[in-house]
Length: 420
Image (cartoon, rainbow, N blue to C red; front, side, top):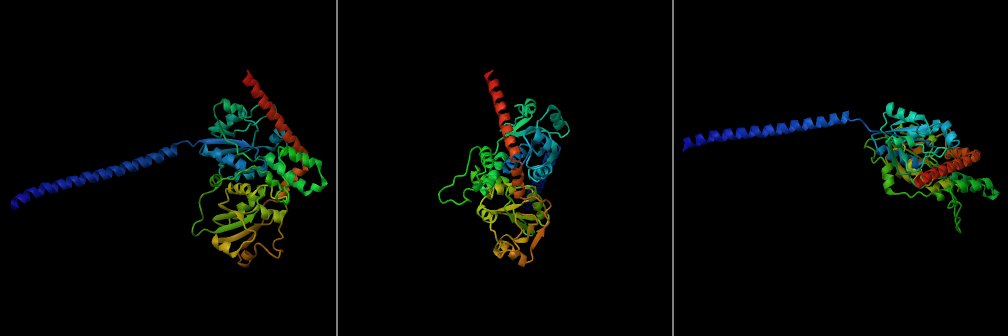
């Protein structure tokens, strides 16, 4: 019996050893195969040419509609290159821009979805410029919205790109346009001098706002009938999510807070946000309600409503998060809740009398030693933009008229083609 066990024990041990080797070999083989596949995938990804898409525009009085167009364009490729049309080209094709090129470049460079910027781009995509885009900038596709971009002669500015088969289209953001915003600004001025019955401002407002005018209901305040009420923007949670970074601060992040109206979001806003972001790891921006802005700036403000202003700020690459409808006064509870390390304010603002007021909105952070005034890089406010419009209202009236005539010729040309 003992000898039988000894005989059978050896084959069993040998079988175990063989099975162990086989299993070990399979495991090692699978591991090596997995490592090889991972390296191969990484190598292919490295060697894969990024899809580069190009989008151009005037980006005058840049708003959330422009930002949403750039967001959509970026989603069609891996890298978004943006051409910003020169002042001279805008004047020749549309009329004088409200914001000069250097301000428009600041705005476009600050949009979180933009990878590169080409300054002084032509208004129309000529064959020569298109070749430069393809050869020098390695552009794969040219992007534009589904609204027509028409030259003064009524022809399509993107005709060459479409013919080359390198054109892609995105959906235009409804409810806002630079023309509409100009109308709101002029309405704001009209309300301030409504007793003067200024015919020029009134008629110009009607033209820019496509006939829409505020409805003065019985018992309504001037704020209720402010320029923001002609906005056709309908905010959705999905749009806010699309603009959001989707991430919060880390446990040890230095959180910097800055608040304001951020009405008619401009280059001055962008530059102060850039400075604020450099002071910490996470920039939290408080955006005041329409009611707060009206109470502190006048019933004719804001020009853009709360959600419009929030989207414009969210699109800025220097901003990590916003508080939609931030309180006017910063409390100890708010500082604790958001773990704010520093509160900042720029030297250029609509009003800098807050430290002289009885109820200083920054009293708490000042008393805690966490308040800092930053030197604003640009001397621009919302009032600056409004004054530019008012001082050149005749030029902007002609600009709007020119745009309408060009679009009319474009559609007439299309109808002739369809009839043929």
